[in-house]
Amino acid sequence: MKQILNNLIKEAKGKHIENKKYFDKLKKKQPKNLDYIMQELHQAEFKKTDCLTCANCCKTTGPLFTAADIERVSKHLKQKPQQFITQYLRIDEDKDYVLQSVPCTFLDAENYCMIYEVRPKACREFPHTDRKKIQQISDLTLKNVAICPAAYNIVEEMKKRMPL
Ligand code: SF4
Ligand code: SF4
Image 1 (cartoon, rainbow, N blue to C red):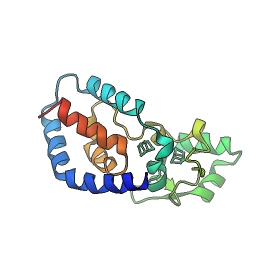
Image 2 (cartoon, rainbow, N blue to C red):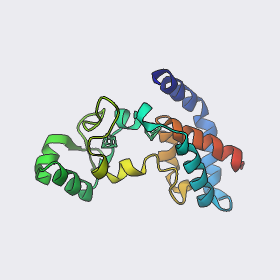
Image 3 (cartoon, rainbow, N blue to C red):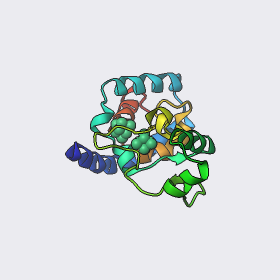
Image 4 (cartoon, protein in one colour):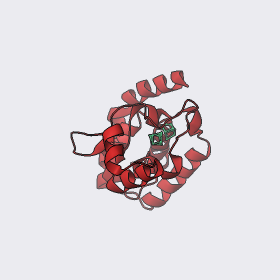
């Protein structure tokens, strides 16, 4: 898997300009049924993706924690929200709460999330490829293509299915 991920980073770099142009066009000229097609592409890709053999998102980029995430996760860990913040979080340059370190503290040795049922919203939604109006998060998607093999494949499929 490490080799696959190394190749992914290389390939994603090679595709960056092409992908950026594609998303620039997507913003101007939205294909009919874009949201519907994204749902289809996302579901088809994740049907064949085993995140437990990857976990690259949890290993390389942590989620941001909303106030509701902090409330929910700290309760689950039987901590006070402030205790949880002090132990695990820091404030980043966008003034969001993020993890103090990556790989994520809550990822176990077998790539399972130790707080799966209460994990942050950002983790539940990653890589955001089934989001409505995906053209509005093009910078994030371009970044995620270099982290997530599934996002990479979904963007490749987008270009085939909806040439612009
Ligand atoms: S990087 Fe993508 S494929 Fe890998 S575990 Fe995360 S969501 Fe799944
Ligand atoms: S909280 Fe769980 S799903 Fe989110 S990054 Fe950490 S291990 Fe991964």
